[in-house]
Image 1 (tube, rainbow, N blue to C red):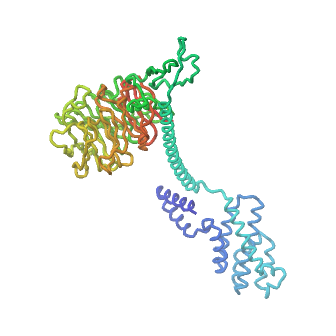
Image 2: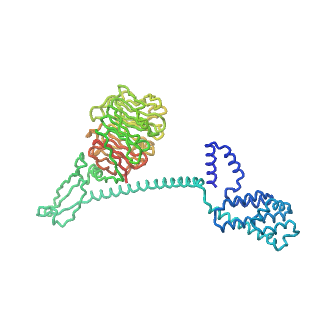
Image 3: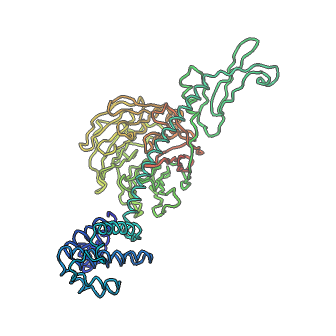
Length: 627
């Protein structure tokens, strides 16, 4: 019935759209009568036996029977004969009912109008023309059976079974299938969503199990003391009769040899010679050194399992920033020579938005408009903020910060309101020391008028703000400063509401957690903290990635991090050829990306899928889908 109503609505909508007013009126009138009752058996039986026959509406009864003859005319020959027999029985039931009700005039009226038609169909009707004039037809052998209750009940049952069979086997018009297919698609989408959710849960569970497994292996390795016997031959391990343990080449371990004569143990250090970890210093690990244990654990990060990986080679200088668009369909990447490229990693996606933008200064920040893929904001080292329309392929607005704050360190769009915030510094450092940026300015801009709305208060001579981030509803803004402070702003009031010292050194990047109850900070010393927003100052999770991204030994002016869509994986830039992917609250374990040929300068996660971006000083940008 739902399909029928939906199909009728489609027909009505089409007739109105085409302006077929007369047809629409006729259609509405026909719907009012609905002689077929939507092919609902119970309603058809009630129409025949409770309305047409008791009220002696012979003409309506004949029209209904003709309607069903037309509906079923394309069926098999034996079914057509059954239809004819049922027609005859229904009309005879009408006649019997009229005789029993004392309305012989209705019988005569029926024969006067349709007698000829009935004779043409069946010559047996000739004897029935006399029934109005027979005094006691129920006593006549020819008519007696039709007055019995058994025959009446058999007719009801036969008609019900026949209509049910015919309607179930009737070919459904294509128009009525639209509703069913729509419901099926909706149901399948729901099933897919549930399955994706279950898959994500299973992936998280699998990663946790793998993390536990790596922890057990690491603990086992550190707890094992390899005792090797000495021999007079040149190979100290040969013929010793002692067990030999083969250690992965990526680990820095101490091999201990035992002298059978003296019982002395001499440490021999094995260094990691893998070519992709060029900026990693060799560590000496002992069972009593926590720092050494952490270093070994990071070196034992497994390589990420890759479903596919695409490399973009359109830049000619080191990559400074790369960002997925709001839907993840496009990628914007920038290089230090002032070039921004917009591209897509999916070969099946349209390339109409691909573009190259020349800004004339080093790109320090990129940000897509949160509600669409249409606008890309670009912040430069000379105080410029450009708004690029990817559909029109032109700069729709070219803003300039004040001369006092020429370095646009970060840009963030509100996820709700048509505004964005720019974090600018008073001067370009000229070195890798992020603390030499000068003073800060936080400006709120209107994206409709492209004018500054307000400057957020930071106090007198505030240290530079290196990173900003909106929460999910755009009501809160977190800002990280070079003095290690986190500042929280109420955007509706435009005032700072709280703040706390998060690091002993400058903060390089800040992010809200996926559940909006925590905030992540990355310091220039490589320390990562997850802070509780419900219990200010409480650290929920922490990790030390100084081996990968310590600005004190880096040529980058700022490192950054990115959270995946589920808030479980944290990807961080790296001085090395590989970037670490930490499992948040996962015992400080994680994975490593596939290597670039130079350090990784910028990272980002796809907004909905387990796909991440890595931009490198080797001029390349990679899109990696995790298996």
